[in-house]
Image 1: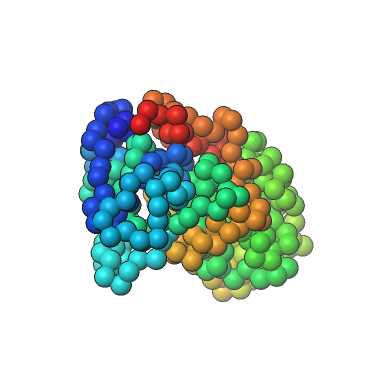
Image 2 (image 1 turned 120 degrees about the vertical axis):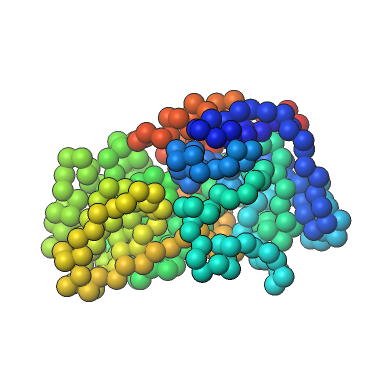
Length: 344
């Protein structure tokens, strides 16, 4: 099967590798669509993935083969590879068990075959069924949508709140919609890229601030009568965005860090700690968040289609150039590797 194998030093190579065979309690998934996550871009940019690793974890596809002792699934079932409920004896690794776990240094340890390949293995318990109303390309956004759902669930967003979103990339746009689904009635967004800013407006943002031309803190305060938003989600995690959020949020409001910053970010606590601001972080999504994400995508309360256009899709052969381009600031909203037409 064909796969984009990471070679180290910011280089992919398209190779023919052995098609894996499922062991007991595993399934083989034929990948249809695999969305590109910012985490994978960071792994590429900072050369964190080990050579021989096939990246990609935002996967939608169909079950191609069942291992022994698999129950509840059939060949041909449409699934997302992730979000299932693990059994009590499942080995889930250091992420879940080691209190010293450091995602920056340990998050890409080991070698695996992910979604930038024609087939991937998954534990049978680790799958979620795709609702009929959700096309494959949208289903590939289930994982980032679960991140947004979890971020909002861990937040203090209440009915009628004003919510700020810093960064209108895929996670920011999904957080914006999840916050609205949770009861936020006014959404303020900071985003410099024109295409992303327009999409935020199309999805219902009351105002979009260009941080390259305007002072985000001053504009958020002006738009809220000097009080600041009730909750601000930092979905950019770059430069001074976290400090901006902490300064702009209302007194005793909350800032939720959703982005994963890979470089130091300056903070000046004296500017905001006297207002007793609550800072919370969030990471990934639990199985209940994946299920909620699929329900929200199926019902249309979160639009995955809005994040995808014809220009979103690339072939496996385009992955090197695409990752190189994504290292730079981009107006592209979402990129999806389309494996549906790859040879089996």
